[in-house]
Amino acid sequence: MTEPTLPISPPSAEAVRSRLERAAGYLANVTEPGKTVLNALSGVREILFAACETGDLPGEFPDLVPRLSQLIADACPILAKDGAMSAERAYWGLGRTNDLLHPCKADAKTAGISYVAIFVGELSIAFHRTQLLAAGFEIFEDIFAKRLPIDTGSAALH
Image (cartoon, rainbow, N blue to C red; front, side):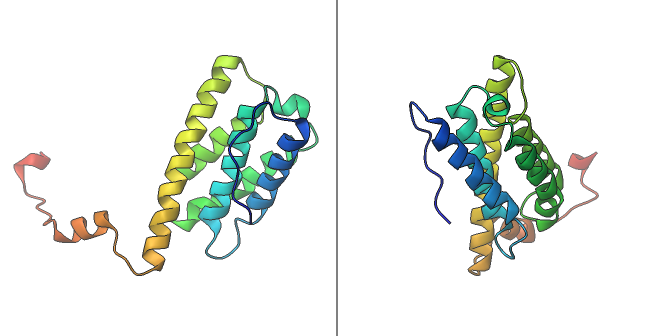
């Protein structure tokens, strides 16, 4: 599995196609044990970079868009069940990624790219958390939650 590369200027249609095909490969492998988040992250990043490199993904790559859209839809419940992030965030982020594959106005595309970039950050955090847990490290939030006494009778809760 190769690391996604940064967007290039000016991009060639072949380079964007290759990026989208890599995204399809990553998304097709989200069921791989222990690599759900990594494959989702890699696939979403490739789609994000492709959207930055071309003005019209559905117009330029009509043969790839339906396949990618279906792979994203298939990845939603898998990423949601993985537990590395909330199901709501998984569905939201993959939904915004899917939006990049469909025609929209320029301002909506810019907003979509921003949303997907945020989701890539969230996936990166989820990936690193899973790596730390797999290596036997405790996560700060988990340690903090264990030490924090729960006072259900506190006036602060009312």
